[in-house]
Length: 325
Image (cartoon, rainbow, N blue to C red; front, top):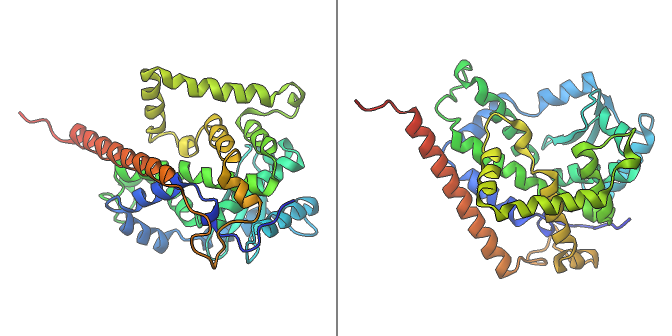
């Protein structure tokens, strides 16, 4: 497997991830919510919970999984080594949390569903979140999305801060952050098919019927999904789906969309350069740069995102305001 000594997250972080984070941090109320989050919900309680209610992976617990994990940590040059836990949950899911003491959590359902190469892709994906410094914002996003449903009942002084615009910005950033971590999975596995298969399995895989699942058909489904944009009404439906504040499943892009982003990057010169050892290192600046065309495109998308958030917030405020006599 390839290794990337000294690699910086800037070498593979998706420009849309960076742009969406900048848009998120510019939304009014973000800084105060961040301070409240650190004050009340920081990482230690979750670490205590995991230590008490899950299995910590190590040389004598899930030893083969631990070996995969250590190889991924080495390949992405992460220091110190994060902790890895397995929790009893049949939903095929995983997540990364923590900044000072980062850790990765795998649901047992994921272990039952995926083969070792696909598990490597999942582990590398979650390590990508840690490498990119996503974890605190991910925890904030999870917290604020949950808090929004009962914000009127809590007493942390957030009632006037958890605006729909801020929640939408968190959702948008969470989706774009996944694109960066998908790239980390591709770098570590060095096998696009394996990463795409892991996405298909998590989307709707079955251990019993695995022999009847076709990655080629799933990729064709992804292409048909993209073709839906030829109808303007379908684009509206997609936007409304991603703007649904009551559906926390939409904190991730649809798997069929992630396929398109990954295929494009796997065919890019930027990916080839990293594979050849030409990438930005932690101590370097400018070793890998975004092209002017890519920068312009992503800046334009970020501006569209800002306008969408502002428009939605204005419409929500209009609906909430008392009707004039």
